[in-house]
Image (tube, rainbow, N blue to C red):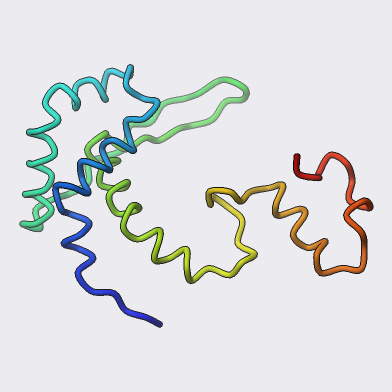
Amino acid sequence: MKRFGGLFDEIVSPRNLWRAWGDFRRGKRGRPSVLRFERHADRHIMQLHRALVAGSYRPSGYRTHLIRQPKVRLISAAPVRDRVVHHAVHRVLAPLLDRGLVEHTYACLPGRGAHRAVLGPHRFCHCSPSSVPARSRSR
């Protein structure tokens, strides 16, 4: 297995944390918790950077609530601060980890998903794409 150095410094860099914040807030800017963080984003990002570098960062507890549509289920959400850290880690590690995945890994990857997963095995069988049910063909 290949090893990579300097990843921690890259993850906790202010530049990466700012980009992670930008990634996280996309589509969530009207939410009260995101607005509170954004109001003092400079201070929050730098505090987060210092805590990560010092080793004093500790994730907070998750907030849980019930969703009733389309069915009843319990949702747990990390605070904005923790989700910025999640995005920062993902921004650095995902490109490195994705390279090592087999071609036929489909879940939770951009450009891959259920439709590609259904169509993938057909390349290995002796059937034509026209024998794939119409509902599972990609559009």
